[in-house]
Length: 371
Ligand SMILES: C[S@@+](CC[C@H](N)C(=O)[O-])C[C@H]1O[C@@H](n2cnc3c(N)ncnc32)[C@H](O)[C@@H]1O
Ligand code: SF4
Ligand code: SF4
Ligand code: SF4
Image: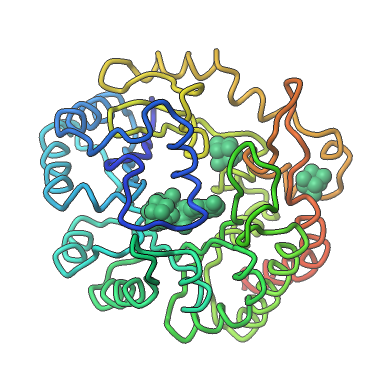
């Protein structure tokens, strides 16, 4: 393999929060073994060794969960030690961690800084929208703690992206949230449409995002972002950045814009491998990185038809004028797949509404960025 990139769950689905919408808690509940516990050191060692001995380019280790900080700082110190042991060819190694921020004290931020971790921090907008669903086990809100973690990252000089789940509440407050992030110096932002649990008809929860609300949210956010760009203030918003790349003929970095699922490797705490964070389910288990080579896992991925299915889109996409910028979106938004074909993306209406609103502005943004 050229570059190896692994999404690792060191604490499985274990978490110190109880966010009402958590898709991973939903997936874990649907498995025979909901939690694989904390990853044993021997498993971590085997994974790091296999990755570093198989790669011919770089190695990227992304830690996620559940809550990956629950594995504890010594786990990550051992990771660095295993990398030192097995990186005999001096390959470049990159690190990232996606966290709810609750445990991020000065020891953590110091470690993340020293070892060049890129951090994703989950914050759902203002206190009002964040504290609606991102709750501690006792039911209390977590906004103040996450804000303190963000400030600690800022003062420690650790680069971080905010990840904001676009719930129905968040969608109604684009201006308030974007303004708050701007005043707080949070210039790297990613917004993820809130997904309803697998196998349920969408729209059944107070957090459920409707296609119309999501379309309106994207339009409002885009106008604010473009206004800032025209004033010379640049804010990174991952989706808009990917659209600019697509317009310039580049390959998108965001998986849902590639036109098909990319070959991801999600590693559970027992070393088990799955094709995507959204499909860490028993029926999609591809093997175990402690025992199986990357070639074996790749062969099983092909046999499973996971990527092939993502190419069989709803017929509406083939005739759609927005396909070059939408590409049918993420497969998880096209469930249920029936008769060997994906359904129409649940947010199709949002993408049509947004792309027809934003195309002239995107072209203008591309011109401004070229100057
Ligand atoms: C499953 S969490 C794991 C990492 C860590 N516990 C955290 O919250 O950042 C990864 C990301 O998925 C987001 N997320 C959780 N449930 C979601 C849902 N139903 N739809 C979209 N994103 C969701 C979280 O807010 C977080 O940004
Ligand atoms: S903190 Fe992350 S893993 Fe934990 S419940 Fe919330 S979204 Fe899920
Ligand atoms: S389901 Fe979505 S995120 Fe997962 S591999 Fe497919 S396009 Fe990517
Ligand atoms: S806008 Fe709708 S029809 Fe067009 S490519 Fe996207 S999902 Fe398909």
